[in-house]
Image (tube, rainbow, N blue to C red; front, side, top):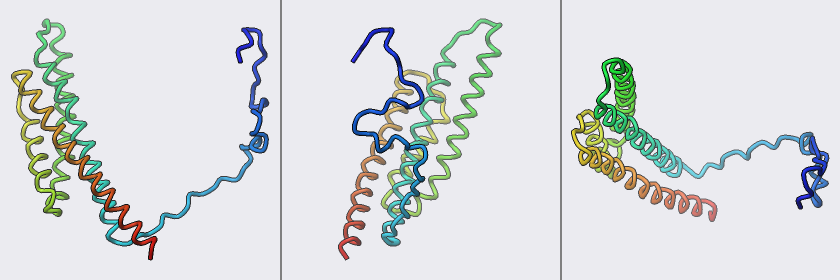
Length: 177
């Protein structure tokens, strides 16, 4: 395959691999639109929407850990006088990120209240919100917060899998009709 540094290199797609000659003019082929989404009924749509919302919740819960860790680490830094202002600015930025994420988490509580089977998630999200507002004084406290977030996201992942199986069953039943 290698022909050395002086081997000619084909440019602008002029060298077409064997077996792909019919696709050589791919730039001039018509654009194929996506097939319209098939409707599998109201139950399928509601399960799909719930699964998507749980996925969004999982992303938000996951996103709170980095700014929390940054705040914890910044609080541990002993900075000289000339760097304190920059340190305080970084701390304020991270705390602002945490506040924005907490607002997003609070918006999910109303969703979780509509689904009594997900009361544990509501409680987990409330715990995440509560603990995100506390100051972590030790690695252990910070580690416990990370474990809480991990526990919530793992449970969401499991339920997303269950919901996906439910969606597949509904889809299969509709296609067999």
